Image 1: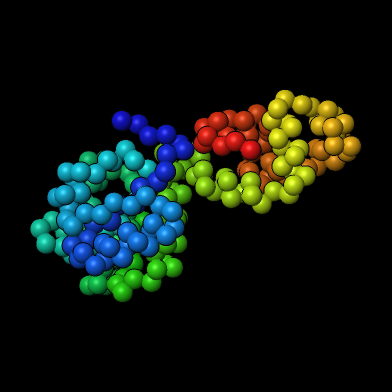
Image 2: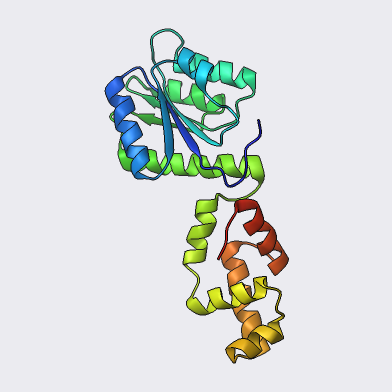
Length: 208
């Protein structure tokens, strides 16, 4: 099963402590993220949908298969989503070990919510870029929200197929002014042309 570029990210939490799982599910839901939690590695391996974009927040020490052992198993299976380790027993050697095998981050308990949210946000973006070569939909929508009213007007008219001259006539602006505004829009969206904007919006399912 393949995933789509506009599919919402899924945050997987694997931790044997129920209180920790509940707290993390609540924290991530407050950020608007889909979250699913598992009490152990076995239930995660049995029930997770590996094709779903997102990341894994994983406790290091658990009964049965440890987080470190799960990391190795996921590596063997070709699991590509970033892994953020949590540990109340962490030390420098353990952190280096997990990072050596591809962990995205290592965060000690007690967890600082702001640091974890930041790490998850970065992991989601990294996974999205790895899967699609595109920034997440939420990031593009955030960039669009930072456009001025005039820039949005020009972008919308340009996307409808109007030339710079035609957009200028509609808005009572010179063609050079339209070009300058569009250049600012392209820089904000990290694209080089209206054609690229069309392709980006189509892949992410964005409409102005």
